[in-house]
Length: 326
Image (cartoon, rainbow, N blue to C red; front, side, top):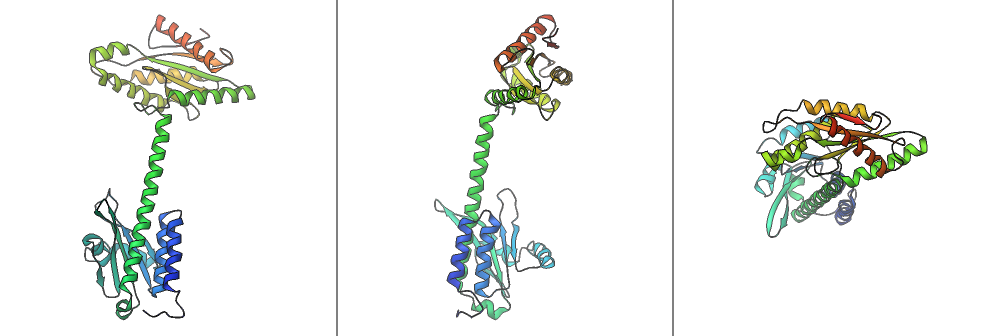
């Protein structure tokens, strides 16, 4: 197709679009710039991109260029028609055309297997302009758009996987609460902050009563159910400023800035007492609470004081909260 003075050079437009697709911060930036540069070079009036989400049965209109708000709304409705060229191209993995609109599938290949990611539809001013469009150039734009979409999805997958591993490194896999490493760091930071500001930090240790007997009688699965139930109560009973973590096989730790640790611990015990029975057994926990700096000047000594209070509670009456002040 001969160049026209008012149009960008096709190769220069494509190069600019490819650069944006490679360096684009997100899908809209990359694919949008690529397709926008292409339709400018082709002299087209608008373009639409639909993508197939693996978790959804139908493709979704993801990007439009050259359409006003009303036309965009009409396009959303139009592409639900199975006969629309955008829908047809994505479904049949082949070029489709209707009047001045040409649609091409977005396809990538992995290990010799083709995967349809969606479709690209470009609309021209009239049928004659569509007839004059270079089919090789159109296919090249579609292939590059497919690569840009695939690249964006891979980047998203990598980010999600990285986030998952990061979360895994800081949480207990059974309960979803913070793990020992994380809560130890939180406690150190809270103690340092309280030390600078002359404040207090409460530390509570919770022990699930008769957990060993439950595991022996009802099995490990029942024990895991109890731990998850207690963890859910802990997560739902504490304040936003508090941190709760799994601290041992059947122990949990609460780090609560301020002096309200005993009150929070009692709220946890009351809520645990309302849990439904598991394997015919009721669930209860016993807690010991200590405070910084009254009961210790570092993490180790404060936790030891809380453990001492816990042991006194276990000896006196399980299912209760004991503080160092008693």
